[in-house]
Image 1 (cartoon, helix red, strand yellow):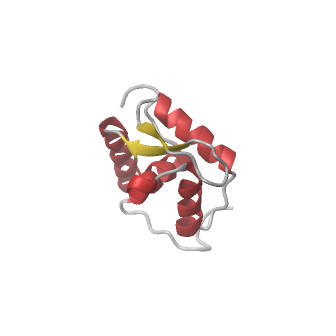
Image 2 (cartoon, helix red, strand yellow; image 1 turned 90 degrees about the horizontal axis):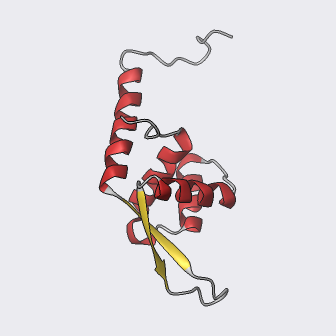
Length: 111
């Protein structure tokens, strides 16, 4: 992996949420998907900052969609790029390899 291509935990969750949401991958929906699947309540600003950072790295692309009726604001829909998919796969594979053979038992970890 080249420098700058390592993904943090939250970046992985955002990419996975975008993949799950397909054509409905808007910022607020990404936030809701993460909350629904992980129970993690995330600030919408953190979601948008992460979406933008991933877009700048070339891991996501976005397109502007017709404005929302209520607010009149332009919406952006996101998609994972081929590069983003490869980097996500590498990150998930690395975690999987690190977990191999490790027994996770509550109360057995060192304090």
